Amino acid sequence: MASRAVDDFQSAILGGRWSEALVFLPDLGIDTADGGSTVKAEAPINGSPAASINDSSSLHASGSGSSLTVAQQVKSLISQQKYLEYLELGQQKKALATLRTELAPIVKDSDHLHTLSG
Image (cartoon, rainbow, N blue to C red):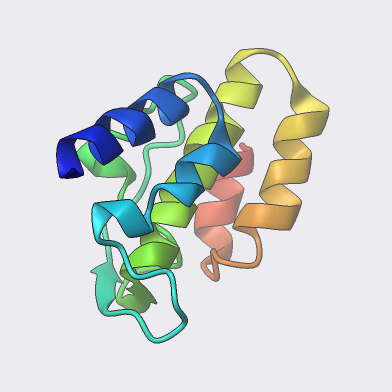
């Protein structure tokens, strides 16, 4: 049932249960296999700790015009939200670890990484 998967995904995101949220992607119809469909990532994140995964200005993962699978796009948004929430909570070490291990491998635009880290 799709609405149950949506509720579970939303609950995981709002509860900061990032790994659990990723588990629900296939239930939401998001192909997590390497050959998933691609989307263009063009709108930059605003870099504010108050930014939300629901904020349409946060749809940026690897630089203007880069193609990502839908799963990569969603994972990037989840990692960005995780990073921003760690910053907001004053947990700089966890935020930095998220930036280095989760976002840097996906985000190819160094200006975007600089914006996130600034």
